[in-house]
Length: 347
Image (tube, rainbow, N blue to C red; front, top):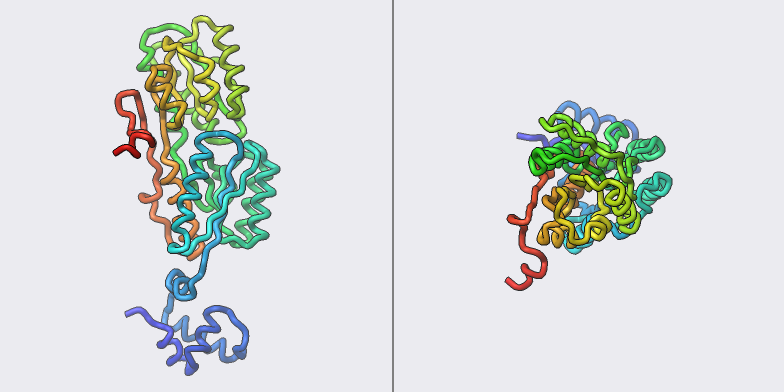
């Protein structure tokens, strides 16, 4: 049977109130008495149930999500999921907030992380930009006792506590395999549209894609990466220019969030093999019309719920259940599209 605070009080010869003060590091306990309580804790092998203690004290966890601003549909979907989770936050003893920062802006991300630490939040979830100053900011948060979860894009060597997102190398390899199979023996190079090579998820997807394309039986050139900064207008311009300069283009892999511009550039063209990421209104419509052949999707709701669970566990010193936090990669083609929001409303 696990020892209790009553056992500690009996062994140390003190009151329950004194044990509570020692466990919560509150003043009002003489040094000699504190030493007795600590000795009783060690003798009995008492391990405090932090989660139960926080529940008893009705502790509320302020958690902040630092997300890229702009019209990136997937990031806006993540933000909507945070807002949705916020409706239930009181029952789950969390208080959720969203801090928008300019996309791919390391300095702005650093300022947001440092600001959250100064506000004494219980945890931070952030879409990481791969930069030394961001890693340093995460290190400062860790030193201050604030757990940090990287979301969607990782920064593995930063000291972050956990990564919530899909295996992006595997996602890139999946895109390469689909591209190779769909194109078969058709000749012609392939273009790649990215947001920025400053985020690790885009680099990892590219690495996986290039590796798989190189393994295909039909040799195929991959053109230099088009960095559209996840901006629809810039992506439209870059893809339009590529189409004009490469008449024998066979396919396009869009590994970022510039799909609105991509679809606009392709118009009614269905002669290319196009693989994209994230099921949004634009990619869904393009799947239905045949402009896009396949979409690789990650569940934004699962990612937000996972980040909240992990940050809560870290704040309480509890283990993370790895299987529960594994984010699945879904593959959608025209024939297996799930019901859209409007269709769900009509059922």
